Amino acid sequence: MAERLGWAPDSVDVASPSSARIYDYLLGGGHNFAADRAVAEDLARVLPVRQMARLNRSYLRRAVQALVAEGITQFLDLGSGIPTVGNVHEVAQEADPACRVVYVDVEPVAVTHAGLLLAANRGAGAVQADLRDPEAVLDAPETRRLLDLDRPIGLLAVGVLQFVPDEDDPWDVLARYRDALAPGSHLALSHFTPDRMPRAMAAGADIFRGTAEPITPRTREQVLAMMDGFELIPPGLVFTPEWRPESPEDVPSDPGRANLYAAVGRKP
Image (cartoon, rainbow, N blue to C red):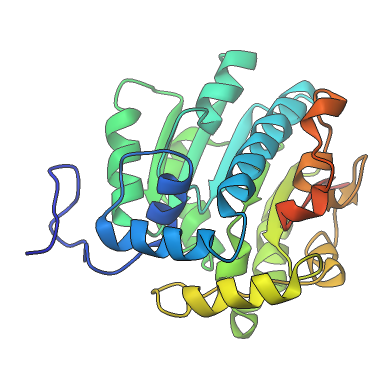
């Protein structure tokens, strides 16, 4: 009999692995199923996925802190996944209690759990939507309630765009968000790449083909093109642990094993 827990909506297919729940497991979370854990363990045999997940999560925290320091108090987190310790709203509101955050994910477990977590937080909310439909995301009632699109937004696309295939044109998707955002808005993204460990990443992509959400790792040039229309802020496009580390000890001896590029840019 398939595993099912009380926090999972009845509509969720617990036998079908989900990227959000796989990531939750890799980060040590408890909102995942046996199918998700099996895929995660398969991935761990070919890629340093636990380290990748940890370094990506640390980058997200530093990026949010940097954006708050730049005066950003509104965040739209695309493909936010299942909220775990160090959520965007926790990081942002610790830096500035006035910050408001909208989480967006297509995964019902992620949105259901976010709704429970945020029930008492009037400055944060969750939207179940496909990030490939910017108009639906931006017009969602919860987005409109929490965010003023006439003021700068911190748009987060951290570790998610590799799940958008080339035929769905993630570059155009980001451009549509960019065009809808006010000047002074920022985009923070990270993205899987085959540049450092091509064979291992190809093996990881093969494993993801057995899930509902295959991945498309992309080269430095392809990821850099996603920042079109945004002015990169220092240090530019780098591997996740190299983006404004808090200390030299936070950068591993081989930062490329993070296998994700990261960048933050500002819309003029």
